[in-house]
Length: 621
Image 1 (cartoon, rainbow, N blue to C red):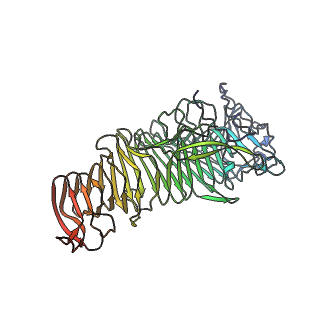
Image 2: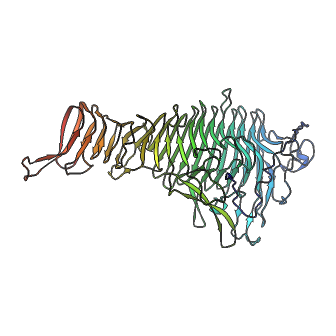
Image 3: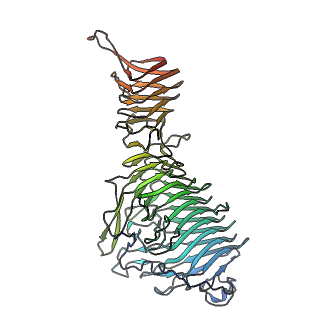
């Protein structure tokens, strides 16, 4: 039987029962119910503040069109555990800021109690829709499980369940949802401990602008059961060309988890930038809590696509110690954890800063401790880029779930990432794919310190794949050891732009082209394909390269960097040195030899057409 991907993180908590029910009852049109604040106290549950003079329910749509520069307060302080605070039939929506020219603000408040408190909003919420502007705030969410067995010693504020949450939907709409807290510890990074839990989360759609701000709090989208629709979209346009713009900022140890349906046989669960939309996910920083480092993080547990369809733009930034986790959709036989640049769209990911990390896994199921290794595709069938800089790390492995107890008997399934077996990274996988891996800065940008990519091999696909070395390491100690493989003859481009990069493993399976336009590439083993060296670029080393062309200002210098001993570099093909190119050697003398002058050698196993300017270095190069 096929493993399912059920995300159950917490024993003895109500999970997604309210979210897992799909109502098939038809939507009944009823008289419109809207907010008028007739009592003037801004209290959401005051029946006199609504047009029908009744306690609000979501058996009909509810509209807070405009709040006149005031803020409606929705208090959860006295919510009973089993009673929905805003009951309904799960088919209707609470609109905050709807229709052109209107602006509304809603603040959700609560008081921590010594019991687990859950509130259900039996329907959906739309923040900024149909041309209106809406703002929703929920502050100081608490999930304190430090002593779960003693109800007097732990505190919860209510977590909110919704059918769907849309932020900024419709042309000229503007929506903002702000969730704040104090940072989510590892024990809190589990299902049913989020401030907001929604079946579907859509931000910036159909010409709207939406922003979700998560600072030290958390939100989860998806459910165990559902239809084949995406559970998450960020920046989604329309087929008619109306773009949406969506932004998510996660900082201060905040977390977002997108799980999707564990039983769905349809689409990948999440997309950033689709159908001419623009989506941006920013993950930044970490905080210390109880001597534990809490990373700001996002988890996509059912696959991820970034930049889908022509005219779309999706981007992710993982900065300053933040974390991104992606897991392959249970329907993806190739075990691709994430696709960056799909169907002529444009997608990019930046991982930069010490302890900044992207963990990519394959099919992942609870409660299995051993799961499948994942892969990544950059430029699958569109334009994609991955930039790793300043100590950032991208690692392809697997995630297992281990059952843990703490000292108080509190139990959970703890996710543990394992990269003892590594996955593959694809660049330009399909014919129309353009994929780029940048080590340091992107080409044409300022060089950055190096980052690390932990993969089994890098595969240059049927499209246009390239790896760019544009970094600041001039020590001669930076060695790139990952295997480079061309999927077909001539596929793949290596670009050396800045810094000193050494290749010390056999890369004869690479048959593309290498372009050195700046810095130094040191080849200490075999490198297949062709080689070109332009102004400011240097080829060095003791290995073997293919047919090589030096242009004006290009330099070839046999031997290891900073070595003073004569060594040999082999050209397994033709060598062409155009006017103004350089051949730099180290020369010494040995009086014991018949010819006392000894220098570096360039062995050419083909035709040599050199027109060089000789350079002599007596002590190194």
